[in-house]
Length: 338
Image (cartoon, rainbow, N blue to C red; front, side, top):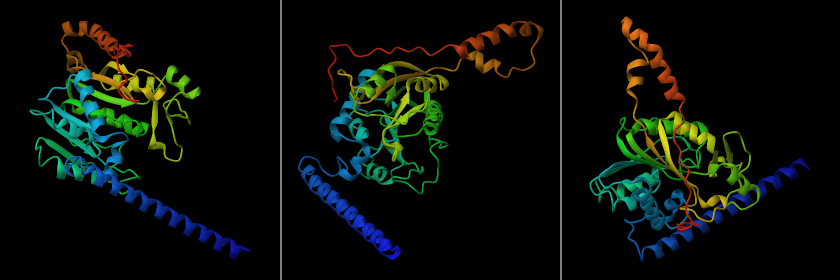
């Protein structure tokens, strides 16, 4: 009986591998046919093959990139001469759109998908030398299982206060809390004072939780913790939503003021600028009081008398919450993305 069971298991494993191989072959054939159709409208230098585009997310590759560019300009005041960082550039979906706008600026992007970065380096940079791409050798079991670095400790390969504008679209929707915390710290480090930060999330708050419970949302996040929830337990990184309180604490800790929040259509909202929730932030300057008084030298009697008041001011500054304007869309705003 044991021998028969073993043979049955081996037979099923063989059938499973055969079916898996057949499915992969069918998928590759479909990609080849669709890539051939795309070539009638685009050259192979303009958009990457579908196998790589899939890594950048769903939707029309060109249209989604152009929509992101319009949002950067209208919501976050991106200018053509600014230095920009793309956190998780993928196969260049937004980079391609930016090539038509950053005429006097500089673009930098990094990603942990080596083939996507290579395509960008080989097809975008030669035509646009002000566009720079780097492979980040970060461990990720789905595309870089032998990665050298952990996302939770990875240091962005850029100088302090280098960028006027940083964006992370569909990035925090796929990485876990420890990694998000480190990325926020690094974004704050490389972002200039008064620089802007454009990011997208799936935000959990009372309204979105009601939508999930009533079945109105596109995603049905569960396995909730006090910080985040996931869509698929077998693949946690497939889609991750974060509690709004946690997100706001990240901004406050890293001295990035939340200027506006635009809630997305994923949670069943009829009027939205996109599928995901958008947050526009701006980094604040380091106050002089912290520079001079966190570790003061020995003080004269006159300055010692004023020190208690300075310490009180410092405590009040640290405890003061960041200003938040959670303005949603008016009824006149079009739904650009469903």
